[in-house]
Image 1 (cartoon, rainbow, N blue to C red):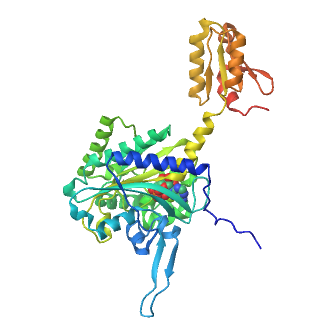
Image 2: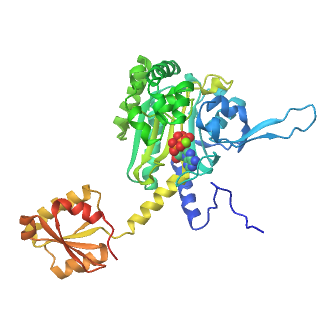
Image 3: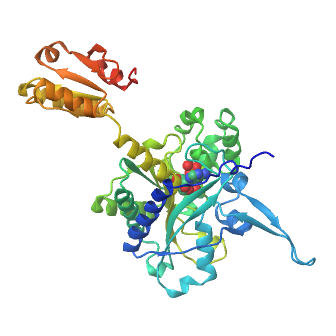
Length: 430
Ligand code: ATP
Ligand code: MG
């Protein structure tokens, strides 16, 4: 009998790795509690129309990635119900908000969730068919302040705090505003016109999007399409004054709180319900799947699925990608440095710091010694912490030619200063 395996795109999480998952979840619970969020758990499957009406018919998720089936009818008179494994959790939370009349409390609802989501995507590093999200939503009636830009800034500041407490370094917050529903509609028409002559040269998905939902073109990941996408008009020009003021207030609050961000005019998100603020936290270490998390404001979502006016903002983090990032960081921390730089005499300390700065800015991991050490002490320290040693003496400084000794092979190589980064980045010969 053929052995059974976990289905493509799904996997088992085993110890010791599960300890890391628990640590991430515990950190999320602890940070979110300090912002006065409470946990919500919604069902793993929902009525299919919940997703088609909220996420949007024309999105990749609804058009091709959902696990949907017809549930058996209980009686002959009953119609079979179309059910879907949740591809994301915001729709379920908003449905629950409406169903339990949480808006009638008059208070802001601040809810977080942790759990599996399902999308039929092509599995690759950081992309699975069953994956895990940690997310949160802040929503409520406008009288509770749910439209305030302060809520957006608070959520972003909470995310920065969470990533910092988790120990993830080197993240970037990318921020944009896609405006009100009317702004988006206006921009969609501008894009449609701009895309008409370009679309035939683009990928098949973009050719379809150019007609059905032009905004989605900006979300395209095909490298060949990017130069064309770069020529398209920006959404900032389509924002009305109220949306511009809202966005400016979000940025002012982030500046005041000291949360760094970069504006990305091309950032639109893969779901139709977003309005105004949209954001992603990205991380260079993840490769092509570089988004750690994404989110934004969704002022009309509740109404679009039959609920009361309940503006809100939320996010979803890819827990799988948090795990990958932490694992890569831990591996890097136990790695040897690319090189140990040993200044020959204290007079060379300052020039050595300058050279170390050049190399580190080139992306290298450099251990900087001290000109006060004897050569033997430098070599001992270098062998413990780095793969190679570079001696910087007066001669090397003058000639600009450095000698690099590789510990594993014992080989010494003379390298011009301008080529050191390239030389040291190459793998060492064992
Ligand atoms: P991407 O552009 O990477 O496909 P997305 O725009 O589809 O992301 P969202 O739907 O906003 O992302 O989901 C929020 C987060 O969930 C993403 O930033 C990512 O970290 C994670 N995520 C989304 N899809 C997957 C998947 N198939 N496998 C693992 N993580 C995922
Ligand atoms: Mg996606």
